[in-house]
Image (cartoon, rainbow, N blue to C red):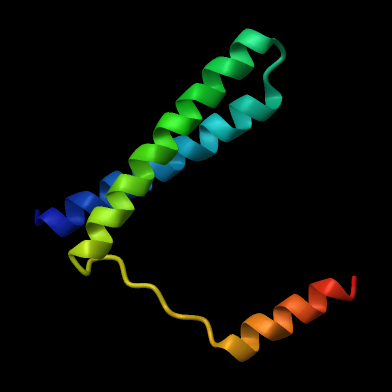
Length: 81
């Protein structure tokens, strides 16, 4: 398995963990549990960001640039609500 494939799998796993930690934070019934999930979420978000940046540097994570007209249109749409 190539490095790119390993990084993609790791990124997906970390994103999944972030989702679980987010829901754990939201649903926590005590301050201690809330804090534990929140700390785990923040740590996972840091790891996700590092993985993303590394992949982007290597050209392994391609993103599309949004057209300015689409950005302006969306801003206008939500400004009117």
